[in-house]
Length: 227
Ligand SMILES: [Fe+2]
Image 1 (cartoon, rainbow, N blue to C red):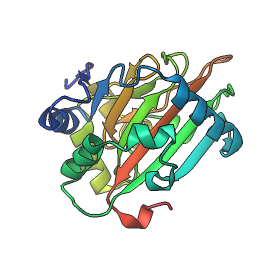
Image 2 (image 1 turned 135 degrees about the vertical axis):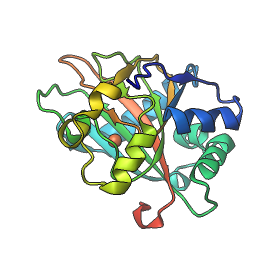
Image 3 (image 1 turned 90 degrees about the horizontal axis):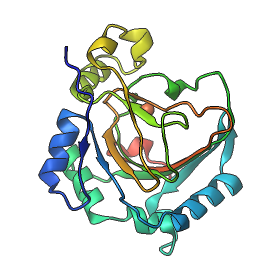
Image 4 (image 1 turned 90 degrees about the vertical axis):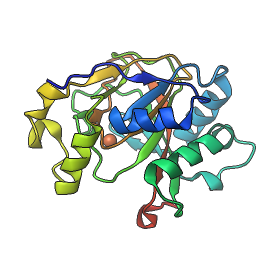
């Protein structure tokens, strides 16, 4: 059994080596209280979701541009324009090449018994390093992110072999015993940094519950850079 149910908890000023180590062994680390006063970012992201985002089956999803397109006074710019994030990305991807840094947000408030595609345990077809911030207190019942710490190297092997066979419950059922998903619960202001080769899934937002999150996706393939 390879079960590793606990993920690393680090700080933004933890050493880059401890972050790289956590990502390459677990696939994730969590920074508690990354943002103390969440309200300005919460308000800005909620507004983007309600005004600019498209509708989807669970609420609104904002598929934003690269970080550089954001106003320098915006909360999103200020929260994500961090040297340590860019440095971590550069070192983790072992690349100085141009990288995409798209901003995404979701506001889930519609209960739906159907699961979205990312509601199933999977690895992403396209490799990314993601920085996700909880803008509300998020528990298992309002859509906590689930992941299988320790599955990142297995996920890389499987993605490299066939990136389209990315649903663990369908294509790699036997892996679930070795890599069971656990919820990452956290208060508003919690930052999750993860490699999308790690098995993961979006949580389910139960009836009458809400979830608001924002994330930034780093990657190296300019073909997938969204302006
Ligand atoms: Fe995913």
